[in-house]
Image (cartoon, rainbow, N blue to C red; front, side, top):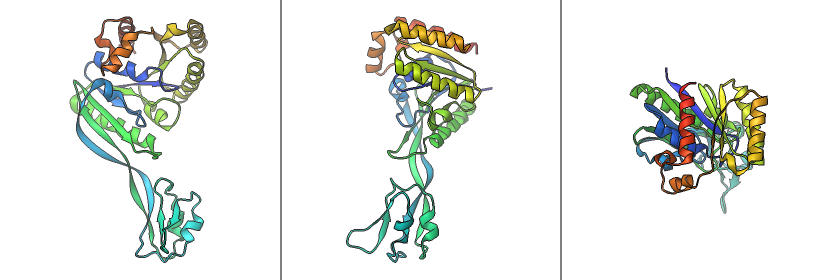
Length: 288
């Protein structure tokens, strides 16, 4: 059985990807899946070589055939997203693909049957390899089907894991509680929530905890840079105890982490306090 472990956070910048990158070095026989499709950067740490690129089509966009268009303007009048505009110096209309929601209203109302909905290329996803397979993606600017792209990344990761007979899929989840975040954790075997001792960190930790509970996933918490504010770290520990949530580890603030990121390397390749803490977290994950 392939176990899927998702590393998530209630907000960006908590150190989620830094932890995932280090765990990717420690784990053996696994596939890494970067599901933060809006800002994919796990590959910056793992430095994989891209082998295959796949187009991702999410949703549809309206297209007006100018050879059939009579210029009546009905489509523009019925569009509630102001996605249709009149061509300059022409009695023809076109669609702004960034504004179009693919609702089909213009298609239904066009008397000339000049409008159709076409598949929309919303991004692409990649199969790459370093020492392990890394599946990552890129959503095009302005596109909104991030959850669907996350699903494609995870599906491809499962396919590769089965093909290579891997035991684990390690998921770098999207931050927050939106569609890509929920798509990152749905159906996984275990969730690691990374937080930090700041007011926003605590606030967003509680939101992601509620989200993970909604999906009925087993999970635990990691406090990153715990020693930059011991008061708030204690607050996080009290919250965890009150909610019966296990804290898997506390990673200290460590300048070596900054140097590792600058060099494009996982911090566990360095001998430092952060590495020691991450290795202990890794040992606990193996037991879940």
